[in-house]
Length: 420
Image (cartoon, one colour):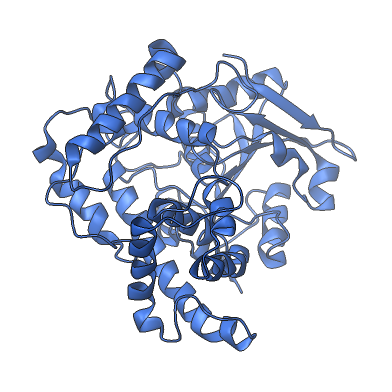
Protein backbone atom coordinates (compact mmCIF):
# COMPACT_ATOMS: atom_id res chain seq x y z
CA UNK A 1 0.00 0.00 0.00
CA UNK A 2 1.22 3.49 -0.89
CA UNK A 3 -0.54 6.47 0.69
CA UNK A 4 -0.65 9.86 -1.03
CA UNK A 5 0.14 12.57 1.52
CA UNK A 6 0.65 16.32 1.49
CA UNK A 7 1.85 18.84 4.08
CA UNK A 8 1.26 22.56 4.64
CA UNK A 9 4.10 23.86 6.86
CA UNK A 10 3.31 25.97 9.92
CA UNK A 11 3.58 29.70 9.26
CA UNK A 12 5.00 30.34 12.74
CA UNK A 13 6.96 28.46 15.36
CA UNK A 14 5.70 24.92 14.87
CA UNK A 15 4.12 23.28 17.91
CA UNK A 16 3.11 20.04 16.26
CA UNK A 17 1.36 18.39 13.33
CA UNK A 18 -2.40 18.35 12.73
CA UNK A 19 -3.46 15.33 10.65
CA UNK A 20 -6.81 15.73 8.85
CA UNK A 21 -8.77 12.50 8.35
CA UNK A 22 -11.45 12.43 5.65
CA UNK A 23 -14.93 10.95 5.79
CA UNK A 24 -16.74 8.47 3.60
CA UNK A 25 -15.71 5.77 4.08
CA UNK A 26 -13.72 6.18 0.91
CA UNK A 27 -13.55 9.96 0.76
CA UNK A 28 -10.38 11.48 -0.62
CA UNK A 29 -8.44 13.59 1.85
CA UNK A 30 -5.70 15.51 0.04
CA UNK A 31 -7.94 18.52 -0.53
CA UNK A 32 -8.42 18.96 3.23
CA UNK A 33 -5.05 20.72 3.14
CA UNK A 34 -6.81 23.71 1.53
CA UNK A 35 -9.52 24.18 4.18
CA UNK A 36 -9.82 27.70 5.67
CA UNK A 37 -7.96 26.95 8.88
CA UNK A 38 -7.83 29.78 11.43
CA UNK A 39 -4.58 31.80 11.49
CA UNK A 40 -3.68 30.45 14.93
CA UNK A 41 -3.85 26.86 13.68
CA UNK A 42 -1.83 27.67 10.56
CA UNK A 43 0.81 29.35 12.69
CA UNK A 44 1.16 26.56 15.26
CA UNK A 45 0.79 23.37 13.23
CA UNK A 46 1.97 21.67 10.12
CA UNK A 47 -1.28 20.65 8.42
CA UNK A 48 -1.10 17.18 6.86
CA UNK A 49 -3.78 15.42 4.82
CA UNK A 50 -3.80 12.19 2.86
CA UNK A 51 -5.83 9.87 0.67
CA UNK A 52 -6.63 6.71 2.66
CA UNK A 53 -5.61 3.31 1.31
CA UNK A 54 -7.55 2.29 -1.76
CA UNK A 55 -8.73 5.84 -2.47
CA UNK A 56 -7.81 8.78 -4.70
CA UNK A 57 -4.09 8.96 -5.45
CA UNK A 58 -3.16 6.17 -3.04
CA UNK A 59 -2.44 2.75 -4.51
CA UNK A 60 -3.65 0.13 -5.17
CA UNK A 61 -7.12 1.56 -5.84
CA UNK A 62 -10.42 -0.01 -4.93
CA UNK A 63 -12.06 -0.92 -8.23
CA UNK A 64 -15.38 -2.65 -8.82
CA UNK A 65 -16.09 -2.22 -12.52
CA UNK A 66 -18.59 -4.26 -14.46
CA UNK A 67 -21.48 -4.51 -12.00
CA UNK A 68 -25.07 -4.92 -13.20
CA UNK A 69 -28.05 -2.64 -12.71
CA UNK A 70 -30.90 -4.36 -10.86
CA UNK A 71 -34.27 -4.65 -12.56
CA UNK A 72 -36.38 -2.27 -10.47
CA UNK A 73 -39.48 -2.73 -12.61
CA UNK A 74 -40.52 -5.83 -10.66
CA UNK A 75 -40.63 -6.82 -7.01
CA UNK A 76 -37.95 -9.42 -7.61
CA UNK A 77 -35.27 -9.75 -4.91
CA UNK A 78 -33.32 -12.23 -7.02
CA UNK A 79 -32.79 -9.59 -9.73
CA UNK A 80 -31.39 -7.19 -7.17
CA UNK A 81 -29.22 -9.90 -5.66
CA UNK A 82 -27.82 -10.78 -9.09
CA UNK A 83 -26.66 -7.19 -9.46
CA UNK A 84 -25.18 -7.21 -5.95
CA UNK A 85 -23.34 -10.48 -6.62
CA UNK A 86 -21.94 -9.05 -9.83
CA UNK A 87 -20.68 -5.97 -7.97
CA UNK A 88 -19.00 -8.06 -5.27
CA UNK A 89 -17.42 -10.31 -7.90
CA UNK A 90 -16.12 -7.22 -9.73
CA UNK A 91 -14.58 -5.89 -6.51
CA UNK A 92 -12.80 -9.20 -5.90
CA UNK A 93 -11.64 -9.43 -9.52
CA UNK A 94 -10.56 -5.82 -10.05
CA UNK A 95 -9.19 -5.01 -6.59
CA UNK A 96 -7.95 -8.41 -5.49
CA UNK A 97 -9.11 -10.43 -2.51
CA UNK A 98 -5.91 -9.85 -0.53
CA UNK A 99 -6.18 -6.08 -0.99
CA UNK A 100 -9.84 -6.12 0.08
CA UNK A 101 -8.96 -8.01 3.25
CA UNK A 102 -6.67 -5.14 4.26
CA UNK A 103 -8.67 -2.13 3.08
CA UNK A 104 -10.80 -1.55 6.19
CA UNK A 105 -10.77 0.56 9.33
CA UNK A 106 -8.45 -1.76 11.26
CA UNK A 107 -5.59 -1.08 8.86
CA UNK A 108 -6.63 2.56 8.40
CA UNK A 109 -6.15 3.09 12.14
CA UNK A 110 -2.66 1.63 11.99
CA UNK A 111 -1.94 3.86 8.98
CA UNK A 112 -2.48 6.92 11.17
CA UNK A 113 0.22 5.74 13.53
CA UNK A 114 2.51 4.96 10.61
CA UNK A 115 2.01 8.53 9.39
CA UNK A 116 2.75 9.85 12.88
CA UNK A 117 6.05 7.98 12.89
CA UNK A 118 6.98 9.01 9.34
CA UNK A 119 6.27 12.63 10.24
CA UNK A 120 8.62 12.34 13.20
CA UNK A 121 5.98 13.20 15.80
CA UNK A 122 5.98 11.66 19.27
CA UNK A 123 2.31 12.58 19.56
CA UNK A 124 -0.02 13.56 16.73
CA UNK A 125 -3.02 15.92 16.66
CA UNK A 126 -6.09 14.70 14.77
CA UNK A 127 -8.93 16.50 13.01
CA UNK A 128 -11.46 13.93 11.78
CA UNK A 129 -14.68 14.31 9.84
CA UNK A 130 -17.66 11.93 9.59
CA UNK A 131 -16.43 8.34 9.00
CA UNK A 132 -12.95 9.65 9.81
CA UNK A 133 -14.13 10.04 13.42
CA UNK A 134 -14.34 6.24 13.60
CA UNK A 135 -10.66 6.07 12.70
CA UNK A 136 -9.79 8.80 15.22
CA UNK A 137 -11.76 7.09 18.00
CA UNK A 138 -10.17 3.73 17.23
CA UNK A 139 -6.77 5.41 17.22
CA UNK A 140 -7.38 6.93 20.65
CA UNK A 141 -8.29 3.50 21.99
CA UNK A 142 -5.43 1.65 20.31
CA UNK A 143 -2.65 4.23 20.75
CA UNK A 144 -3.70 6.27 23.80
CA UNK A 145 -0.20 7.63 24.34
CA UNK A 146 0.41 8.63 20.73
CA UNK A 147 -2.05 11.49 20.30
CA UNK A 148 -2.02 14.91 21.92
CA UNK A 149 -5.46 16.11 20.79
CA UNK A 150 -8.27 14.73 18.64
CA UNK A 151 -11.21 16.71 17.25
CA UNK A 152 -14.08 14.56 15.93
CA UNK A 153 -16.73 16.37 13.83
CA UNK A 154 -19.84 14.49 12.63
CA UNK A 155 -19.34 11.62 15.04
CA UNK A 156 -19.69 7.89 14.40
CA UNK A 157 -20.74 5.94 17.51
CA UNK A 158 -18.35 3.02 17.36
CA UNK A 159 -20.40 1.18 20.01
CA UNK A 160 -23.36 0.88 17.60
CA UNK A 161 -23.83 -2.27 15.61
CA UNK A 162 -23.92 -1.78 11.82
CA UNK A 163 -27.70 -2.11 11.50
CA UNK A 164 -28.29 0.28 14.38
CA UNK A 165 -26.09 2.82 12.64
CA UNK A 166 -28.05 2.53 9.39
CA UNK A 167 -31.39 2.85 11.19
CA UNK A 168 -30.09 5.99 12.91
CA UNK A 169 -29.03 7.46 9.58
CA UNK A 170 -32.40 6.75 8.00
CA UNK A 171 -34.17 8.43 10.92
CA UNK A 172 -31.82 11.38 10.55
CA UNK A 173 -32.62 11.77 6.86
CA UNK A 174 -36.34 11.48 7.60
CA UNK A 175 -36.14 14.25 10.21
CA UNK A 176 -34.15 16.45 7.84
CA UNK A 177 -36.63 15.88 4.99
CA UNK A 178 -39.39 17.04 7.35
CA UNK A 179 -37.39 20.17 8.17
CA UNK A 180 -36.69 20.76 4.48
CA UNK A 181 -40.42 20.52 3.70
CA UNK A 182 -41.20 23.15 6.35
CA UNK A 183 -38.43 25.41 4.99
CA UNK A 184 -39.72 24.94 1.44
CA UNK A 185 -43.31 25.86 2.31
CA UNK A 186 -42.19 28.74 4.53
CA UNK A 187 -38.99 30.71 4.16
CA UNK A 188 -38.26 29.46 0.64
CA UNK A 189 -41.70 30.43 -0.68
CA UNK A 190 -41.59 33.79 1.09
CA UNK A 191 -38.44 34.57 -0.88
CA UNK A 192 -40.55 34.38 -4.05
CA UNK A 193 -39.61 30.84 -5.08
CA UNK A 194 -42.09 28.10 -5.91
CA UNK A 195 -41.92 25.14 -3.51
CA UNK A 196 -41.77 21.86 -5.48
CA UNK A 197 -43.00 19.99 -2.40
CA UNK A 198 -46.22 21.99 -2.15
CA UNK A 199 -47.55 24.62 0.21
CA UNK A 200 -48.44 22.21 3.03
CA UNK A 201 -45.53 20.45 4.79
CA UNK A 202 -47.94 17.72 5.92
CA UNK A 203 -48.44 16.63 2.30
CA UNK A 204 -44.83 17.16 1.14
CA UNK A 205 -43.95 13.50 1.51
CA UNK A 206 -46.86 12.38 -0.68
CA UNK A 207 -45.96 15.04 -3.28
CA UNK A 208 -42.35 13.87 -3.33
CA UNK A 209 -43.34 10.20 -3.63
CA UNK A 210 -45.60 11.02 -6.59
CA UNK A 211 -42.65 12.77 -8.24
CA UNK A 212 -40.65 9.57 -7.79
CA UNK A 213 -43.40 7.41 -9.24
CA UNK A 214 -43.74 9.72 -12.24
CA UNK A 215 -40.00 9.55 -12.91
CA UNK A 216 -40.09 5.76 -12.76
CA UNK A 217 -42.89 5.67 -15.32
CA UNK A 218 -41.31 8.29 -17.57
CA UNK A 219 -37.65 9.25 -16.88
CA UNK A 220 -36.95 12.93 -17.43
CA UNK A 221 -34.29 14.15 -19.86
CA UNK A 222 -31.11 15.90 -18.75
CA UNK A 223 -28.96 18.05 -21.01
CA UNK A 224 -25.96 15.93 -20.04
CA UNK A 225 -26.11 12.31 -18.93
CA UNK A 226 -28.81 9.68 -18.79
CA UNK A 227 -32.49 10.52 -18.22
CA UNK A 228 -33.41 10.97 -14.56
CA UNK A 229 -35.19 8.11 -12.79
CA UNK A 230 -36.57 7.76 -9.27
CA UNK A 231 -33.28 6.28 -8.04
CA UNK A 232 -31.43 9.32 -9.42
CA UNK A 233 -33.80 11.65 -7.60
CA UNK A 234 -33.16 9.77 -4.36
CA UNK A 235 -29.38 9.98 -4.87
CA UNK A 236 -29.77 13.71 -5.43
CA UNK A 237 -31.95 13.99 -2.32
CA UNK A 238 -29.47 12.29 0.00
CA UNK A 239 -26.86 14.79 -1.20
CA UNK A 240 -29.24 17.75 -1.04
CA UNK A 241 -30.24 17.01 2.54
CA UNK A 242 -26.68 16.67 3.76
CA UNK A 243 -25.77 20.35 4.09
CA UNK A 244 -28.05 23.30 4.80
CA UNK A 245 -26.35 25.31 2.06
CA UNK A 246 -27.54 22.68 -0.46
CA UNK A 247 -31.23 23.04 0.33
CA UNK A 248 -32.05 25.92 -2.00
CA UNK A 249 -30.17 24.59 -5.07
CA UNK A 250 -31.69 21.16 -4.44
CA UNK A 251 -35.20 22.61 -4.33
CA UNK A 252 -34.51 24.54 -7.54
CA UNK A 253 -33.40 21.25 -9.10
CA UNK A 254 -36.68 19.58 -8.05
CA UNK A 255 -38.67 22.49 -9.46
CA UNK A 256 -36.83 22.24 -12.79
CA UNK A 257 -37.59 18.52 -12.77
CA UNK A 258 -41.29 19.22 -12.34
CA UNK A 259 -41.06 21.31 -15.50
CA UNK A 260 -39.40 18.48 -17.41
CA UNK A 261 -35.69 19.32 -17.04
CA UNK A 262 -33.62 16.78 -15.11
CA UNK A 263 -30.26 18.49 -15.67
CA UNK A 264 -29.80 19.89 -12.16
CA UNK A 265 -31.03 16.70 -10.49
CA UNK A 266 -28.61 14.72 -12.67
CA UNK A 267 -25.79 16.97 -11.47
CA UNK A 268 -26.72 16.34 -7.82
CA UNK A 269 -27.09 12.60 -8.41
CA UNK A 270 -23.70 12.33 -10.13
CA UNK A 271 -21.83 14.40 -7.53
CA UNK A 272 -20.68 11.19 -5.85
CA UNK A 273 -18.49 9.50 -8.44
CA UNK A 274 -18.33 5.76 -9.02
CA UNK A 275 -14.85 5.45 -7.49
CA UNK A 276 -16.14 6.84 -4.19
CA UNK A 277 -19.20 4.57 -4.32
CA UNK A 278 -16.94 1.56 -4.86
CA UNK A 279 -14.81 2.57 -1.88
CA UNK A 280 -17.84 3.03 0.37
CA UNK A 281 -19.03 -0.47 -0.49
CA UNK A 282 -15.64 -2.15 -0.16
CA UNK A 283 -14.59 -0.50 3.10
CA UNK A 284 -18.02 -0.85 4.73
CA UNK A 285 -18.26 -4.53 3.85
CA UNK A 286 -14.67 -5.26 4.81
CA UNK A 287 -15.49 -3.75 8.20
CA UNK A 288 -18.98 -5.06 8.89
CA UNK A 289 -19.93 -7.90 6.53
CA UNK A 290 -21.83 -10.84 7.99
CA UNK A 291 -22.07 -13.10 4.92
CA UNK A 292 -25.17 -15.21 4.50
CA UNK A 293 -27.17 -16.80 1.70
CA UNK A 294 -30.31 -16.97 3.81
CA UNK A 295 -32.61 -14.14 2.76
CA UNK A 296 -34.96 -14.89 5.63
CA UNK A 297 -32.17 -14.17 8.11
CA UNK A 298 -31.84 -10.55 7.02
CA UNK A 299 -35.54 -9.66 6.86
CA UNK A 300 -35.91 -8.11 10.31
CA UNK A 301 -32.86 -5.88 9.99
CA UNK A 302 -33.74 -4.84 6.44
CA UNK A 303 -37.31 -4.05 7.48
CA UNK A 304 -36.06 -1.87 10.35
CA UNK A 305 -33.94 0.16 7.92
CA UNK A 306 -36.81 0.45 5.44
CA UNK A 307 -39.28 1.58 8.11
CA UNK A 308 -36.93 4.13 9.70
CA UNK A 309 -37.59 6.60 6.85
CA UNK A 310 -40.85 6.97 4.94
CA UNK A 311 -40.22 9.91 2.58
CA UNK A 312 -38.42 7.67 0.09
CA UNK A 313 -40.91 4.75 0.21
CA UNK A 314 -42.68 5.60 -3.05
CA UNK A 315 -43.33 2.02 -4.16
CA UNK A 316 -45.09 -0.76 -2.32
CA UNK A 317 -43.20 -2.35 0.56
CA UNK A 318 -41.18 -5.34 -0.70
CA UNK A 319 -42.69 -8.70 0.09
CA UNK A 320 -39.15 -9.92 0.63
CA UNK A 321 -36.01 -7.86 1.13
CA UNK A 322 -33.04 -8.93 -1.00
CA UNK A 323 -29.54 -9.63 0.24
CA UNK A 324 -27.13 -6.71 -0.06
CA UNK A 325 -23.44 -6.39 -0.95
CA UNK A 326 -22.21 -7.04 2.58
CA UNK A 327 -24.41 -10.13 2.93
CA UNK A 328 -22.60 -11.51 -0.12
CA UNK A 329 -19.07 -10.42 0.81
CA UNK A 330 -16.40 -13.13 0.54
CA UNK A 331 -15.31 -12.84 4.19
CA UNK A 332 -16.75 -11.56 7.48
CA UNK A 333 -15.92 -8.09 8.77
CA UNK A 334 -14.33 -7.43 12.12
CA UNK A 335 -15.08 -3.79 13.00
CA UNK A 336 -18.09 -4.49 15.18
CA UNK A 337 -18.53 -4.00 18.94
CA UNK A 338 -17.34 -6.97 20.93
CA UNK A 339 -15.00 -8.14 18.18
CA UNK A 340 -12.07 -5.82 17.41
CA UNK A 341 -13.88 -2.94 19.11
CA UNK A 342 -14.89 -2.88 22.79
CA UNK A 343 -18.60 -3.16 23.49
CA UNK A 344 -18.33 0.24 25.18
CA UNK A 345 -15.26 2.40 24.41
CA UNK A 346 -13.54 4.07 27.35
CA UNK A 347 -10.62 6.47 27.57
CA UNK A 348 -7.71 5.54 29.79
CA UNK A 349 -6.95 8.12 32.47
CA UNK A 350 -3.50 8.89 31.07
CA UNK A 351 -4.82 9.74 27.59
CA UNK A 352 -5.86 13.22 26.57
CA UNK A 353 -9.58 14.01 26.34
CA UNK A 354 -11.01 14.03 22.84
CA UNK A 355 -13.26 16.83 21.58
CA UNK A 356 -16.57 15.69 20.07
CA UNK A 357 -18.50 18.06 17.81
CA UNK A 358 -22.06 17.54 16.59
CA UNK A 359 -24.81 19.41 14.78
CA UNK A 360 -28.27 19.34 16.33
CA UNK A 361 -29.97 18.28 13.08
CA UNK A 362 -27.26 16.27 11.32
CA UNK A 363 -29.01 13.84 8.93
CA UNK A 364 -26.29 11.19 8.66
CA UNK A 365 -24.35 11.25 11.95
CA UNK A 366 -27.09 12.18 14.43
CA UNK A 367 -26.07 14.36 17.37
CA UNK A 368 -26.88 11.48 19.72
CA UNK A 369 -23.75 9.74 18.41
CA UNK A 370 -21.56 12.59 19.66
CA UNK A 371 -23.43 12.73 22.96
CA UNK A 372 -22.88 9.03 23.62
CA UNK A 373 -19.25 9.00 22.51
CA UNK A 374 -18.43 12.01 24.68
CA UNK A 375 -19.94 10.18 27.65
CA UNK A 376 -18.13 6.92 26.89
CA UNK A 377 -14.79 8.68 26.47
CA UNK A 378 -15.30 11.19 29.33
CA UNK A 379 -14.57 14.04 26.95
CA UNK A 380 -16.13 17.43 26.16
CA UNK A 381 -18.93 17.91 23.64
CA UNK A 382 -19.61 20.92 21.43
CA UNK A 383 -23.05 21.13 19.80
CA UNK A 384 -23.98 23.52 17.00
CA UNK A 385 -27.66 24.38 16.73
CA UNK A 386 -28.83 24.03 13.15
CA UNK A 387 -28.73 21.69 10.17
CA UNK A 388 -25.93 20.02 8.25
CA UNK A 389 -23.07 17.56 8.47
CA UNK A 390 -19.50 18.53 9.51
CA UNK A 391 -18.39 22.14 9.57
CA UNK A 392 -15.32 22.66 11.80
CA UNK A 393 -12.90 25.11 10.15
CA UNK A 394 -15.31 25.59 7.26
CA UNK A 395 -16.30 29.21 8.06
CA UNK A 396 -19.65 27.94 9.30
CA UNK A 397 -19.70 28.69 13.03
CA UNK A 398 -17.20 30.99 14.71
CA UNK A 399 -18.32 30.00 18.22
CA UNK A 400 -17.41 26.35 17.61
CA UNK A 401 -14.19 27.18 15.76
CA UNK A 402 -12.99 29.34 18.67
CA UNK A 403 -13.54 26.44 21.06
CA UNK A 404 -11.72 24.02 18.75
CA UNK A 405 -8.74 26.39 18.50
CA UNK A 406 -8.69 26.67 22.31
CA UNK A 407 -8.76 22.88 22.59
CA UNK A 408 -5.85 22.48 20.15
CA UNK A 409 -3.87 24.97 22.21
CA UNK A 410 -4.68 23.11 25.45
CA UNK A 411 -6.65 19.83 25.27
CA UNK A 412 -7.73 20.20 28.90
CA UNK A 413 -9.16 23.71 28.51
CA UNK A 414 -12.55 23.05 26.88
CA UNK A 415 -15.84 22.11 28.50
CA UNK A 416 -19.26 21.17 27.08
CA UNK A 417 -20.87 24.01 25.13
CA UNK A 418 -23.80 24.69 22.81
CA UNK A 419 -23.36 27.29 20.05
CA UNK A 420 -26.14 28.93 18.08
